[in-house]
Image: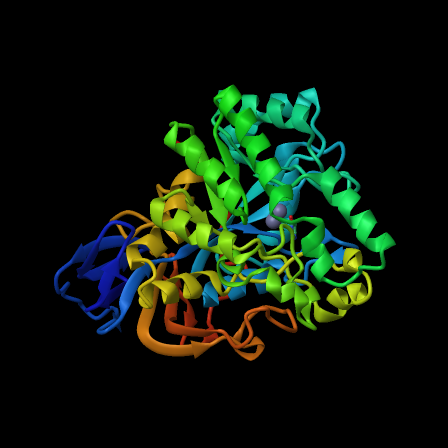
Length: 455
Ligand code: DUC
Ligand code: ZN
Ligand code: ZN
């Protein structure tokens, strides 16, 4: 054994029990009562919870977007992830015109591999669908890249998939064992409403929300679900943020369709009221935060299992870049931070009694591992899996501030938010990468994950 974690309470999606964990060669080798050591390193987790590392299945690191590049590099983003108990990050690799799927992932990997502080995978964004791309689906799945995303928005930016594209990729995904994710909002409605507000001189961040309110997202959720049901193809809706969409997901799941919904901590904590604040532009992301009814519906969806996963959509921009839109909300680069906050926030809500700890582990770790096909390695504390482990102190009080975060961004929308309990250590494949508030890992440690989705 290389390391033994002693005296902690292990919490997985299914169980809570006291046991020791023995780690060898980066894997969980033994779980048992009072494992006897023979001189190896010991972590005493008395009074602490021992959890599987979180999986953030939705990030945009150093991504060209909104006239700039998102502010966290692969190094900064995965460093921050490690410090928030996230041990696997799924980033979006944007297909350039003329490029293939595997080529897109490989190009991104060249950038990511030397920087990654935790393990990572890519979802490839299909933005240039051609017959050759559909033909490449099987090869991509066989390569270990079984998840693709399409945008139902960003028409002017040349990223949008229309209904024809969406249906073709859904059908092909069913055939090949892939899973399609969608960013669901209606682009035409957004454009019409945006033009109207700009003409009326309504340019503050509030009109970012007003140009894409609840029904603009709900329509696209319903349309995507309609196509998935019609074609009997699985579908994953990213960053669901509205009540009507939530209800549609529930209906489809109750009817037996393979529909997954992800939401993000920002939709569970903030409402659209943030856009009335002086610093409202800092909260501009798409889809925007919605009203309290939507927030409540999302929490209900977590409890009922209709929300399958929590991820962050981490896509931060520096405050000077957000300032481009001081007098015109359309010039604000869209995106917020959260990669370091997801697990601590969800666990804190569990610690306050809103959900169980098992539920927090389920939505932040076990479910994304299963849905995206890396549950052979990740998502639980079981013999044979990677020793991606978080030691959590339920008694630690923590107030989020820019100064105690580990990303490269110069502010956080989470400033001042108080959490009950906080991670005190993170292990990535048995290696300590975060300890008592400090990053202790190293860039280049993280490995690309090849995956296979079981159906
Ligand atoms: N939404 C954002 O806010 N940022 C990145 C991409 C997206 O869809
Ligand atoms: Zn999106
Ligand atoms: Zn996103």
